[in-house]
Length: 76
Image (tube, rainbow, N blue to C red; front, side):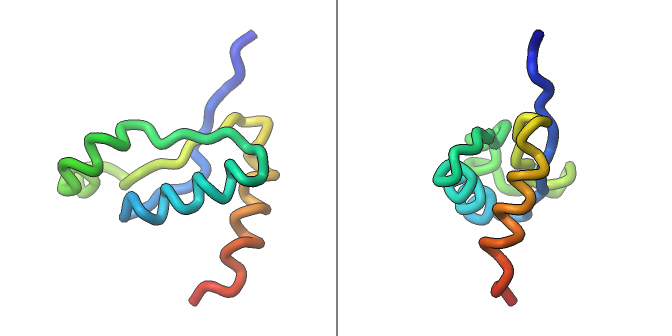
């Protein structure tokens, strides 16, 4: 049976999405950023939808959310 992939978070900038993706990777959580090449080349495409999405397996959603929440707890 195939595992379901869900959206964890949306971003306005690719750099933010890639940072969070690396944080998840360091915590052994697989993630992906669909259409990341298009967003880099044509950033105006982000205005047409909800931004850049960071996707994770549904089974990892809660853990991924907690990892990012802890990582960003001191962000302004």
